[in-house]
Amino acid sequence: MALSTHDTAEPAVLSRARSWNRPMMVLAAAMAVLTVVTATGLLADDRVLTGAAIWLKPFKFSVSILLYALALAWLIALLPRRSRLAERSAFVIVLSLFIEMAVVVVQVIRGTTSHYNTSTPLNAALWNVMFAAIIALFFAHLLIAVAVLRARIPDRVARTGIALGVGVSLLGLLVATPMGGANQHTVGAPDGGPGLPVVGWSTVGGDLRVGHFIGLHALQVLPLLAWAMIRFAPRLPERAKVRLLLLAGGGYAGITLLTTWQALREQPLIRPDGLTLTALAALAGSVLVGVLLTLRADR
Image: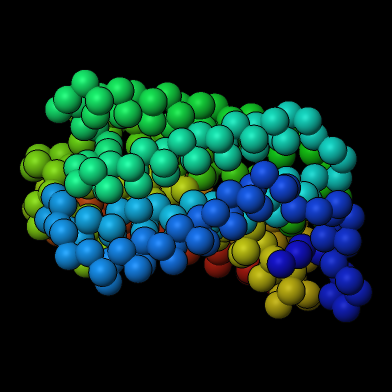
């Protein structure tokens, strides 16, 4: 994938990229292997933990981290000049995620939970190590966001999409902080209750994983949207593309915050009340009006 203002020539930004960040690619490769291993575990191991197949959690984490690592490896390579800040931060993220996944897999093998588990001294120690790795990851991601915002990527549309992707994904990490305070991800109900298929998001209480998941994957969605605009809307002026991206980024951040607010009010994602639906309608309406005004001004 590449971003460029040219319609037929080789994309300029990718042509200047040296190579994708190697530590991130190592992480991605490891997660690809672990995805296969955990998928095999889902088929071969019939144990159940907190109401779900015991290998489901590491499987979901493997896929999510694989996408995250590929996106960051690509984004760092797009920086016009070498950024030691971004490269060192990427190494910290890789180390942090290796630690987190190691704890998750070890605990699955032991037949117990990993996150927020302080039931024994060993479980508490493993959780504390994981928690420290998560904190390190957050600040390393923040430093990469600073490096991206400081970079002089010549394509304004590409620069906007990348900056929004990194920024909103940072918000996705931030909205997960209430989980640490409560030592669980469900609000108003215990962890491990009834949940949606595959993702496991609670259907009886609020679930803080929803906003975390949505926000984190802005790292892929918003740069991809920028690429799609460049590739498929060549006649749309650059200024209009940037405005549309800002609207999309604002709407995406709004959804991240809205689903987190909904969860904090002990409300399942699939059972929004009138207040949540009103806020969603207001957000969607604001974005739609902004899009229509932008397109009208372009005409």
